[in-house]
Length: 235
Length: 199
Image 1 (cartoon, each protein chain N blue to C red):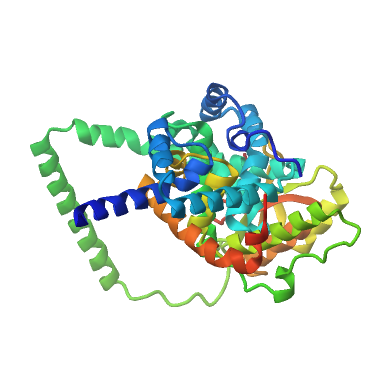
Image 2: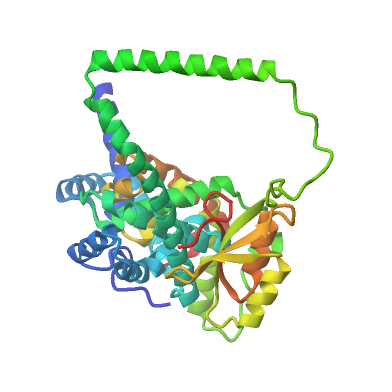
């Protein structure tokens, strides 16, 4: 008797879990028949099924707010795609350069590969030892106290790269003022999508602040950090 | 608002083979095909993300993340499910991730209250507006995983197997989430007035 009660309890539980899908009419025929057979004898499930139906009706009646995309949103999306493609190509380029070397390693027979690896390790060790000895032998050079015309030029100030797309309505003057405001310089572009690479000095405002300022301007359709953060090459 | 003839149409807009052909072109990096897919899905994903996150401030950003993932991952789509199931699965996971990363600031109490009812408004419309507010708050109180199952089952009318595919979990987990959601809604709704709703 207890066994039958337990079985009935499990059936009730299984049917109870299926009621939302009985209410939305998506149960397979076999399951639907089982639910209907149980509903005929279970007042609690009948009540719950009614609640599921009422909740479903209420959820549907709330409706959905979904605007159509604005052309600028699509432009931004396409610019992001352009950006991701540029990144993907630069990774692919690196991989292409490495691939022949990898193929060569894979083509080398196993034992030979081990001995070559050991030789390479010994050579590296010797080179490292030589360099270390050179460093120890030479005292540090005193700092230069004078500058001649033949001295190398000082290293360029570090800069950060941005990818910017201006709105089609932006005038040349507005773009110039925007760039002036962030101490930026166009170093490459426009890409086929109209994206420019802009360089800003690294010692200025944080990149986040510059990006936020650009994005708040109606003349800017898209502004992102360039891949790697440094001002990159053009497209 | 008039409900569409079938809520499944909101989710599954186009015949599956047409969408698959479009996605194959996207996989071949066809930008025109991507634009078509973007237009086809924009409103559907927007509505779905808004229901899932209840955060207007996040929807646009997540939607772009979803579409970028579609662009990058189109070649890896294996065709075992519908294109829409795959895309809505991406949207589900992106939405949950952003909700964890950027939890909502506690809202002002006043902002949560429904707009005052207009005495000139027809009674049925007023009731519906009030219900929307009540239900919105009750659904908003659910964890996002449970809310997703409720919306997918009740609003979009999906079978539990389809929901399991979208949210990427076993069917029993879907049933369990719905079980907990029902229990919480039952606790929340009588006090909020849904028991007086007559459909």
